[in-house]
Image 1 (cartoon, rainbow, N blue to C red):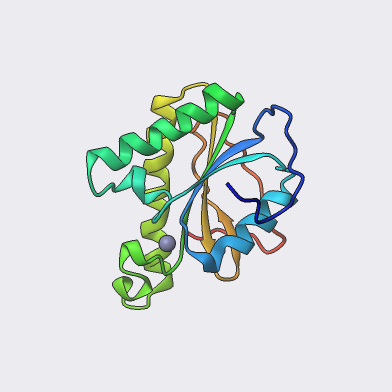
Image 2 (cartoon, protein in one colour):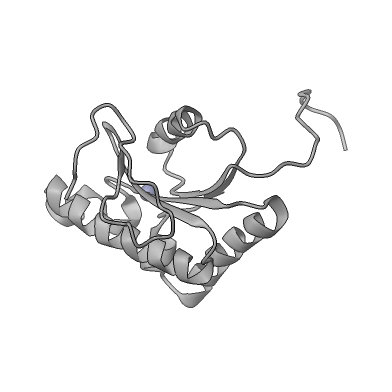
Length: 167
Ligand SMILES: [Zn+2]
């Protein structure tokens, strides 16, 4: 092998602050990164796949769902993760984008809310001891899904200065 880049990465073992499941859409990556930083999450096990929460809520096949659950299981086992943040986002191509909802942002948000809750319930059922937090990423910020009290120890707090109910 030939070294092509020098960078000193932290080499010590770590406990993950959270596992984060979100879409690979580049448009939301900066918002997610800044949100995690603001939440004080410095060491996240990022599970970045097309669709994010969709892989649990509406998987294309059983393999997809099992694979993502296994990724979370590994984060819990290897990095003692106690918190899972599960995200989907507006205009996600795996849902057919905003066009699938005929441009209706409220209809899109309503649909994603139910998707996120379903993904959260699946996580809670598989990992009863972890906290599960569902979030919807829009182009103006990140919205916590309310009404998810049944997800174990899911925090019920505003996540941004402009946080409002989306549904
Ligand atoms: Zn997407």
